[in-house]
Length: 140
Image 1 (cartoon, rainbow, N blue to C red):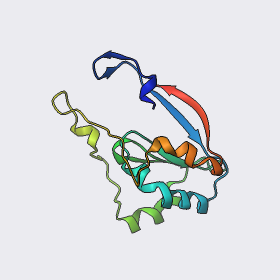
Image 2: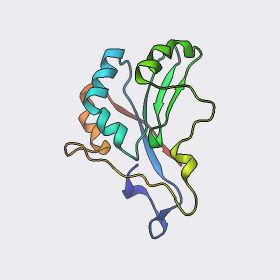
Image 3: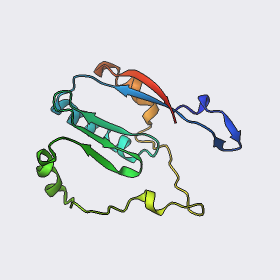
């Protein structure tokens, strides 16, 4: 998202938001862990970005969405059993998230996070050596 592209329809209100989608192709598991080690704090704590990892062969995806909701898409969820237990994540039928607490009186708020003087908007330049590229811009 780039606030320069957004057109307010009233003070502080926009009709649509433009979000840039970036990819880094061909990352190994070890490279993904290096990226998380270097930029995880920024990505996880930023309130306006989403990120994830996907596998071309398995078609699995792990996505971190707004309010730190993690979605795992897989044909074989058993592959992730060793992830949940060490992180003390229990499977529940009715997960309560931040989305469940929002109303007209208590709307959610997302904010840009600054980590060591960097924001998510600095990452495309920062990750050029990793081969990051703009894949598309989505309108929401």
